[in-house]
Length: 111
Image (tube, rainbow, N blue to C red; front, top):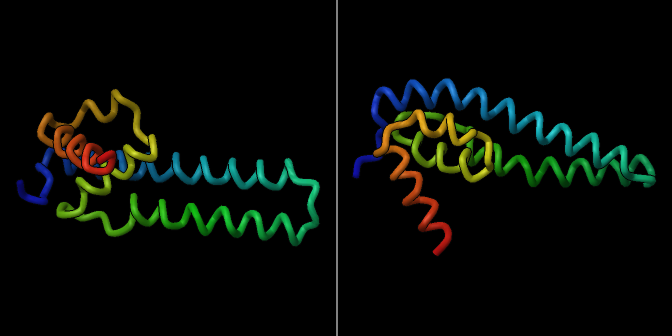
């Protein structure tokens, strides 16, 4: 099994990568707003909560979106799927081979 993704899947990946990134950022910004809105803490405590939240989310965004190349697309796509950032319909547009490779990664993670 090579690391590169098929050309047709690569084109889909590039389109969905941007969409998933927007969804991720929207989700995190909602979390930030919620963290601040629900807190009766001091501004400094609110800042610390937001800082810690963003620090946690920074690793997730890096794992799913940094350095998109054909050789890294499958693992990035698996990470995007793990974060539930694509619909089943969107994932269904990828080839059976790509979906199987993502499933293999998910199975390894569960083991």
